[in-house]
Length: 258
Ligand SMILES: Nc1ncnc2c1ncn2[C@@H]1O[C@H](COP(=O)(O)OP(=O)(O)OP(=O)(O)O)[C@@H](O)[C@H]1O
Ligand SMILES: [Mg+2]
Image 1 (cartoon, rainbow, N blue to C red):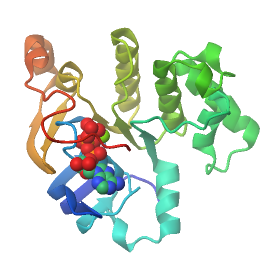
Image 2 (image 1 turned 90 degrees about the horizontal axis):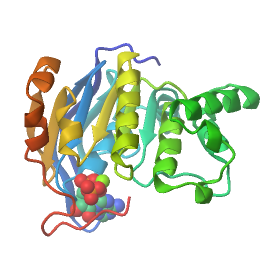
Image 3 (image 1 turned 90 degrees about the vertical axis):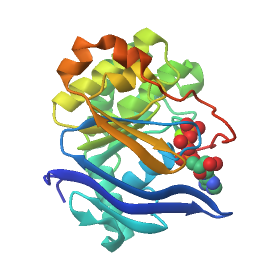
């Protein structure tokens, strides 16, 4: 299956209830067209990670439908779904999910495990991806020998090494200083310019405001879906800075463990 459809993601009335009765998503409609670069914003516990997991087919909704490149996810066998994910979707998880005791290069090469490429080629491409995120000199370090921001960049390299059609990133700059964060955002912009469709969860109003589309979620519902033209972002940078974003760790919501 190749993602050539114009609508890469289509969610209709998606609800997700976790055991114990938490309704993390309540009737979400979302369409993502090929080539889009969008931010998902909202308070802690509002359902952002849950939404990303469902869009990435890692989790199935309790109700509603999910279509990826026009294919109804509910109709796909687990095997076909895994194949779709492995070939077309890259993830940067909120908590990195790196394999401990394994070098940065092998962690990134793992992103190509189901690609059919030989091990040497997987490692060669992993090295290139690490260079791209500025970690060419940390190739042989294991996760505990890397800083938090460097681990985050390894996770990004792993997500992009297979050149996914759809890249889903959960707070990819959350643990980075502003310079490294900018480098990561530049990388995402470059990948988007190369054709990748990208959804980024962020708490950073400036980052969200600089992206062409912002989807705002609150209590499991999409409450705003705004598009900015590049001219808007350039002409009024102060708007991006003052965008009324919710701070992390809001109100009575508790933080998910992911
Ligand atoms: N596996 C789970 N079992 C039960 N409840 C869960 C589970 N995962 C998440 N939740 C709950 O679902 C809601 C949404 O969680 P989610 O992780 O999607 O929030 P989030 O918007 O990503 O928050 P944050 O910004 O803190 O990462 C929260 O109230 C959370 O406690
Ligand atoms: Mg989250």
